[in-house]
Image (tube, rainbow, N blue to C red; front, side):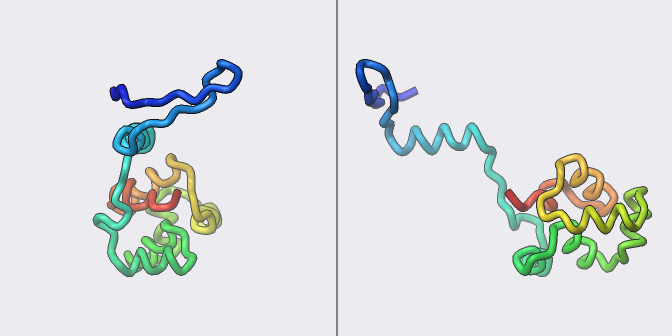
Length: 113
């Protein structure tokens, strides 16, 4: 921990702290683990996501699967799978289930904050 922190007070009550940039970035890194969005993600998948597809849809298309085939792998109906594809930022549990069914890592699907 650094000692170069300045405390800003209002009426004697601490309201803010000024700290060195290196300390700030260290604290931010602790709060939110960094991840390299494109690590292990094919360029075509990234392009599809940037163009508006959900990560789930982009990966399905990249893998050459139909919605019916993807749904069967996951163990849901085609209609339920179609709903998964419509969501740009899915729940972690959904992403984990899809990643396992598609044979990819969770981090390769969890690319939207």
